[in-house]
Length: 292
Image (cartoon, rainbow, N blue to C red; front, side, top):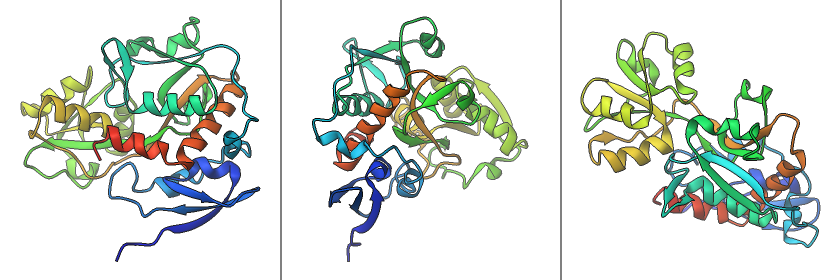
């Protein structure tokens, strides 16, 4: 028998935290009927994780005329090649997080302009005048010292990829003494050094190099962002890499601005994120890009 939807009563401003659901009621407290979770990695703990993010009492008011358009376009810089989050097609940026951001911005009446740049230049766009905000950036305690963040766009994290037909290991501890590759451009190298120092960690230039080292047998495993690793493995080495069924670390990806700046932009954007989560738009975008 199919599981019945779960009723959760929250303040209006907490709706952004709820995964796919339908709102019933109005006023300051709203009941959400949450559909049973499907078996996919980013959603497995989506409800418990996201309910911690309270976005403000204005979030659910987006359906009314109280939301006014921002003055002028807002530039959001991102890495130009980071599928499925961002990639270039016919000279235009597309991807999972491009669609989530533009949908949330449209709902908040923010005129969003996506500015794709090489990875090394993304954070610098906040100081060289090319952008007011950047995405996606994982929220970490260290980064909070330099950036202010929006509500999460998506929950992501590190996962272990191995050569097919080998099953993915249960966790980092299973790789003690093994050679594991990971790109030096993200937070996973530092995480592994601290959490599993017994691993023989090799830092690579990027994701394609990490996967090449794995497929050719130079490494026993590759520690990669779950969504990005799965997308590139299926594109570059179909049927040669085992896509894992769980992540060994989890963290939210969000929009970031320079510390102490553009607070109003984040408030408005959070309201947009709240709206697309509440009406199911976020879920449809996620399903489309993750092949569900």
